[in-house]
Image 1 (cartoon, rainbow, N blue to C red):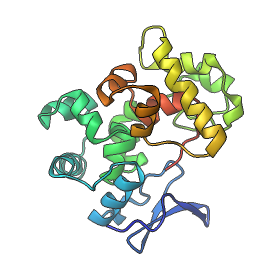
Image 2: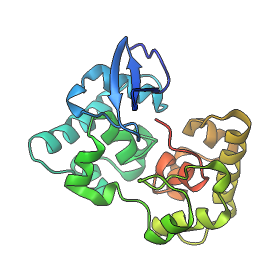
Image 3: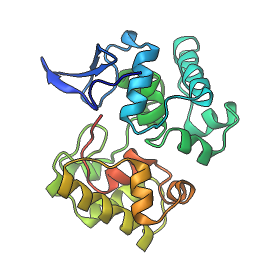
Image 4: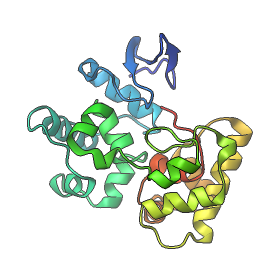
Length: 227
C-alpha cells in the first residue's frame, strides 16, 4: 500500500491524510472523522505512518477485525488487557504489534473514532488529570501543546497517571533522547529507533512504559501529539 504522505495536512479546519491516492478526513487527534471512511487502505497507510514496518500481518488483522466487530456489532470497546486475552496475546506481544499503543495504535488503525471511544469506554481516552490540566497547556487527551512548557514534574505526573513507581535512570534516558531528537529534528522517532539509541529491547521498553510509546513515553517527554 502506497503512502503518499507520512501525516495529515490542514484543510478546512480538519486534518487530511492521503494514503494510496485517497484522502481521509481526521479529527485533531488523528482519528477517522467520520469513521465510515474506513477501509483496508486506510489501515495499511495509517499503520505505516505509525511505524509498523513491513505492512500489516495476519495477527494485526485479527486484532483489527476483532476491534471493529466489538465496536460495530457489540457496541462496546474492551480494555487493553481484555483485548489481549481475547486475542490470545501477551501484553508485550500486543505492544510489539502496535508500538504506539492500544488506543492510539490498534484502535486508530481499526478506524475507531475518538468520539466512539468516549462513548463506549471513556477511560481509554481520558488521560489527563484536572490538576495537570490546570498547570500545563495540554490537549484534550493530555499531550503538551507547547514543547517548551515541559518540565520534569510533567513527566512525573504522567508516570503517576500510569501508576508507575519512581522514574529510573532508564526512564529518563528515554525521555532525554526523545526531547533531544525532537528539538534537533522537529520529528518524533519511531519506537525502534528510540530502542536502538537507548539500548533497550522492545520488551524492556514495554516494561518501562506500560502506557505505550506515543501515549506513554512520547507524552511523558512533552512531545506534541502528531498523527
